[in-house]
Length: 192
Image (cartoon, rainbow, N blue to C red; front, side, top):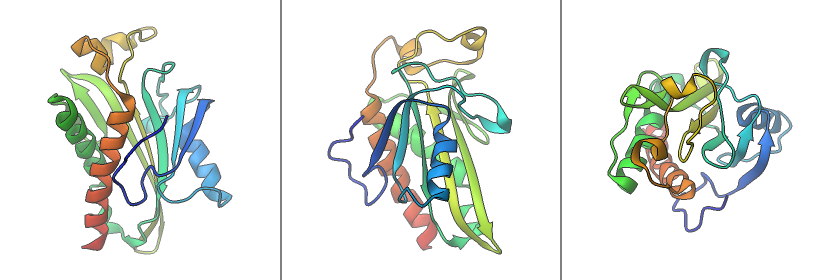
């Protein structure tokens, strides 16, 4: 997974790529704990064996068809500035899909990206605070891009771009566009 010509200041400049990880979110937290990750470095996995959704639910990641990635940001700003961070992440993702493909997805508040009431993506944010300041935010995103086969009854509640629009989509383009849009909004948020 390479992002050529990405127009960001720090998000996605480095991608740590893995065929398989238990969880990108857990891995980023471990790297951060050991000072082995920079702000905005992406941990990307083709497949997660223990992907984390909200409320400790599992997040299914197929093989080489979807996006499963996490990163950490160090805002070091007042907690209140980041009140709507998860929503801003979702809006940035939806904007990326709309700009690239003229497809409109929706947000199921607080952290799901849906199409026709079926889940296409999810966002997990975990913050570390000190007093009134947010020091770190771990951000994990799973998004179904080219997945065709969902195990068990997941096909009844989940979908993908490919499943809905009968075409292949570029994971690299989606990730790059999302990072550009989100970074701009994030920097505006913390600099206010």
